[in-house]
Picture 1 (cartoon, rainbow, N blue to C red):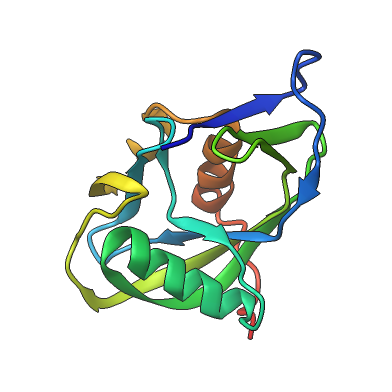
Picture 2 (tube, rainbow, N blue to C red):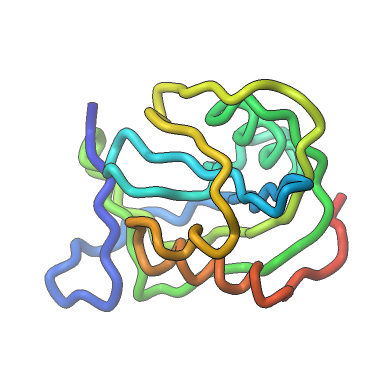
Length: 158
């Protein structure tokens, strides 16, 4: 399996060769915990998410990616933000793709399912909100979580 390497404002980073719309979801349960995965490609904690496929909406991609990576069914409840910093590039070593960041962060509520790992997640957990930003993760993911925790949530997308 290839690796995922995140670079931010790094003069030694490879040059981006693609721009792929992606989505992440902050799923919060009734206990004030956030659904997080530990990625198989870089060992970092992250919010569930991934690329938006042709033929699906942002919301459909968010629901699909959350289910695939965590086993949890989710209802999308809002928009937290759009992250498109060209200084953040992501190198996928399996195919030498280097993506410029373009990620939409949504909020959601769990609607069923059971925690399950996947090819992309070797650990899936409900993490107390206060602990979520302290986990080992890339700074860009920490920024998303902090934005959510500071209640920067907008309207629901369709």
